[in-house]
Image 1 (cartoon, helix red, strand yellow):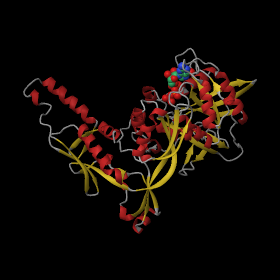
Image 2 (spheres, rainbow, N blue to C red):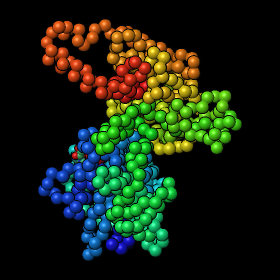
Image 3 (spheres, helix red, strand yellow):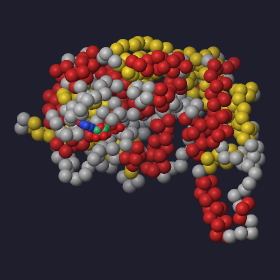
Image 4 (cartoon, helix red, strand yellow):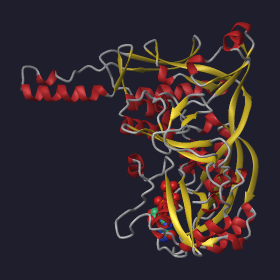
Amino acid sequence: FLVEDIRNFSIIAHVDHGKSTLADRLLELTGTIDKTKNNKQVLDKLQVERERGITVKAQTASLFYSFQGKQYLLNLIDTPGHVDFSYEVSRSLSACQGVLLVIDANEGIQAQTVANFFLAFEAQLTVIPVINKIDLKNADPDMVEKQIEKVFDIPSDECIKISAKLGTNVESVLQAVIERIPPPKVHRKNPLRALVFDSTFDQYRGVIANVALFDGVVSKGDKIVSAHNQKTYEVNEVGVLNPNEKSTHKLLGFLGLLHMEVFNQRLEQEYNAAVILTTPTVPYKAVLSSAKLIKEYRQKEITIINPAQFPDKPKVTEYLEPIVLGTIITPDEYTGKIMMLCQARRAVQQNMMFIDQSRVMLKYLFPLNEIVVDFYDSLKSLSSGYASFDYEDAGYQTAELVKMDILLNGNIVEELVTIVHKDKAHTVGKTICERLKDTLPRQLFEIAIQAAIGSKIVARETVKPYRKNVLAKCYGGDITRKMKLLKRQAEGKKRMRKIGNIEVPKDAFIKVLKTQ
Ligand code: GTP
């Protein structure tokens, strides 16, 4: 293929607006998959995605399409839809020149539509608005067209109205991809320059990297260098690298609860690895004042990812926390409640705009740690599921931070060490202790649960001892029943993490974090 006959594009959409369905139709139309077979949502191929019905990890497919007597190669790069994964969205987008922005003709523009649009816009990609689900009874494509014009400044005649489900007008989407999206700019004569935007690990073939080629050519047998770590790798097959396995174990930090659960499940399923969960933490920064520490870190400003490495106040001039620009779109009737929620999360309002007669778009600056765990769930429940939310990176700001330990009978629970805002330490500590009290199985002795900042205890709960033991009822009794109970107990124990002499079930961590 000549470079000018190649198009690299992504489909971006708010959750459930029909991205996967459209991708399936495009694959069918181009003969990439067989229409007669039950090939629903081929791109959602990871096991977790099937189980949860959401797209997590970007997948790619190459489509061949003839248009006006010419054969084109269309690379469809799939992107995840859920708010917790916007980092993967931007990575996928950097490999494209254009996007299809899919919007549900009934629901209209939602928060993720806005966030995804701006990711694409900032990356200077061509945006093709696709209004989907026009077959629905309540569909109002004209209203959505007006929203698109108002919010994104895209003329309404550029919108393509389709039903991905029925296949209506999907062909014009492919034509728009060819006509409106420019081919990639690749200088084949220059030395190789490529971006790895996704990778998976195959036990037999090594690491399979999806790359976007910017310059040069890559072929089997080539030796290539990673600009990130300067290591050299050999190309076994085109596009197949064989680097160290470490990268598959080294994680993204978790961007949200769902993200954490999904990764936990993915690691267990794909890599057979048991994972120790830690509190989702955001990368804080500290400006050091201690000469000794500055020498040790060889810089004045450090990033703290592991709460255990949090340097205390006298050694620090100021702490900085990451902030994000959040977009909320909601029916007007919930605006008041949502504003109160945002205020409780230390958010500062930036903007408010009616996108049509009944829907409001709110923009707030949030400290990332205030939304990373359960903000989305709270927003959904107070708006009966109608409000949508997404966010993008907005730099750092000064914050009064402290490190909080959680102790079980005096032993620190490493997984639950957190960095919190000073004003919130008591509330957060109290909630974690209460949650732990409800979640921890009783043991044969009393358990003291404490939240502490340095040596100061800010919250405390007690779990009363458990008096019976599993075998008490079987004394001298039926041996098979006894074995069965012991086996059941042993199975339960596999999921336990021992802290001091206290057994903590693994899912307790998730339960505790969920309601922080
Ligand atoms: P995520 O992968 O979770 O981001 O969702 P998605 O955007 O890929 O949405 P998906 O394609 O899974 O579609 C969501 C739901 O909308 C499914 O139940 C589809 O059958 C339905 N749907 C998609 N396109 C259409 C359409 O054109 N008309 C109607 N009526 N339903 C559609």
